[in-house]
Length: 228
Image (cartoon, rainbow, N blue to C red; front, top):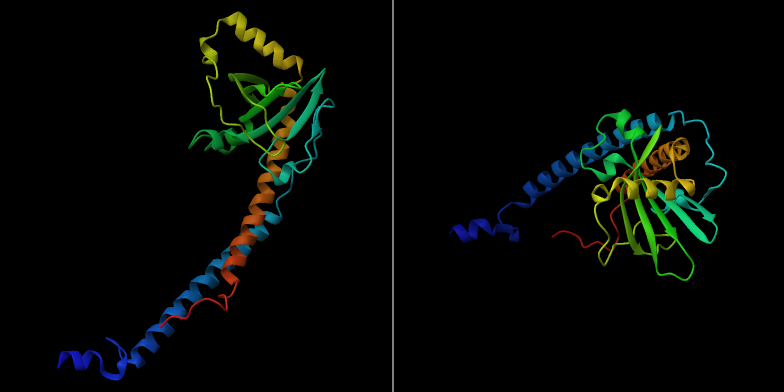
């Protein structure tokens, strides 16, 4: 008897009328959630679009901006020094240390540089990880790594990369600072890289709002299988 009741009308546990009401309710709730999200995205998009960008800043004259840097995760600046090529990538403190740079001022004023010094004919290069501040720059590590390609951000080392920088004696640390500063890597890079990161972050945020909004509004594919 129970089997006959549950399968009456060939519809399973719920009568077709109840399924119709349930589906309408679910669709109504989903539509309301989507509408609320889209309004929120639009409001934030408009708010961010009105933000005043920082004044345009040029990098030091010895450096040039890598073409397409705003659209990639690779180096931002490059220059030549004798037969060497120096490339510089940058990120904020918060991207290196989880929870780092929670204070907005810290996020803006503490940058990390990946500096790659390469020579023609060599498969490896000297890689410096540096902390950059408005009035100072410090080296965190120095390692030998596979030479970077233009579109790469950081090559993963496959062999011993060297001792911790702080384990080196003071004369060696001073010499390495002198080596990198001779190639123009110092606090003079800060104003440009700070402004560049602002522009990149702003562009990425605007693109994110658009992408999420497009995903929400895009209709279901015609090829998507219909629910039973």
